[in-house]
Length: 159
Image (cartoon, rainbow, N blue to C red; front, side, top):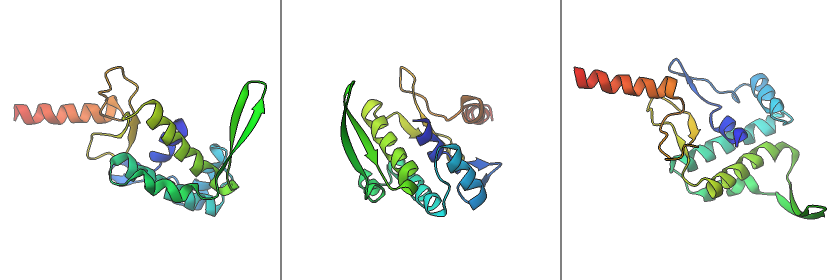
């Protein structure tokens, strides 16, 4: 699930400017390799496509069907092990990280439905996975976005 958030949050706003970790080949290659990828240009293009599609789905702007093209050529292979039946995902090497992100999204939706969401701060592009008991987390960071929102509301009330 951390890989999913890493991908969703790979294009943050920093001081009001968008920073794309996958945007330039050198930085993108490093980002992909740090997560077990190969860092090829084809992999980076597919990761950007997966990120955009996943962000649209999580924001509710797109249907989960938008993720289908990312799973083309992907197969699940059953294997009997000493622990029982295990499924192995086979994907083209350049697609592995993107496929893992889509599978992590599906697992998150199944195990923690409705808990993956965008930050409630309109000036933020990040996503969060709410692990709170009450399922009421709204900000990617209470110290940054939550504090800014609370300060903004306080200022408006006292004005």
